[in-house]
Image (tube, helix red, strand yellow):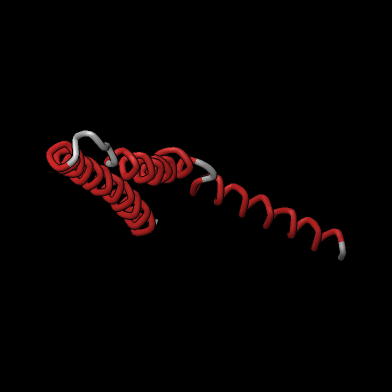
Length: 96
């Protein structure tokens, strides 16, 4: 029981850590692209395309880690498994 909780917590920490790695890469690369764009061709801005589309990916990564991960979740799975097993037992007992 404790081992499964530890594994679940470790997995969650890795997901959060992965998101923040993604976020820092996004910030670092985009700041670099902005500087390059403004130095090389200030009259023609192109950096925002990378920023927008990568930002969409970053947004969905955040949603997956912080929002969608909350539901259905492990507690919901356990509850649903018990519910289905109970229904199966009741069905089996009614057939006897």
